[in-house]
Length: 241
Image (cartoon, rainbow, N blue to C red; front, side, top):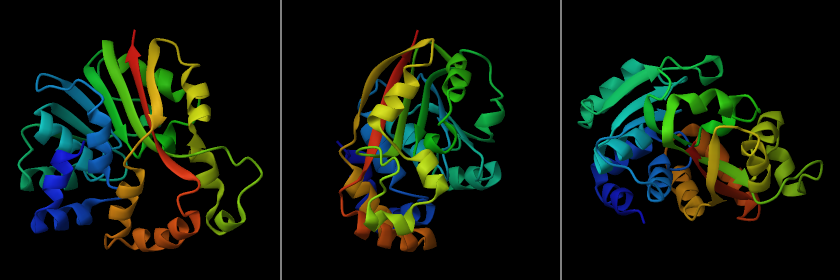
């Protein structure tokens, strides 16, 4: 399921690049699993929303040859452009700065696919967000997300071992499949095709924890406490109608 990521990680120089650009669980592996459930080709125009340092963009541009608009709020377009030049995808990837909560600078129906990995949960937890994005995808196009989630809603019963790591931000953004399904069902103009737990959750997390990022070092304690009991990654796929 992950030939591109596995081959990428078999090269020491490429692994160094990947470790330097990860901002959370391995976005390249998550992107490859998510994209394996989609029909992507080189003629497609894709919005990679919340692309971070561009590992998802790299996967989409290199593996499929698609044209990708790499949109992020936290990482500057100049930084991503220089990174895209260094890995030879600057002819396929357009870096852009956007705040999805304030609207997107694109024409309606401009994209074949809206793709987002490990980002949508930060801004997509309201009833208004998904309906605001749907118009940018053409009729018959696809919206596909991969987000960290919970195996069940904690509510007010946060497990003892997780309490040291739980805060308002995590409580707001991390939810179960049923919670996300309930939210997405409220959006008009699309049909949910698939929502399920992803297979690469444990591997994507372990690759992130092995990086040199200071936040990864902080996450080690949390994931040791979690012990595979509570977290998952959720794949959501919908068709615009």
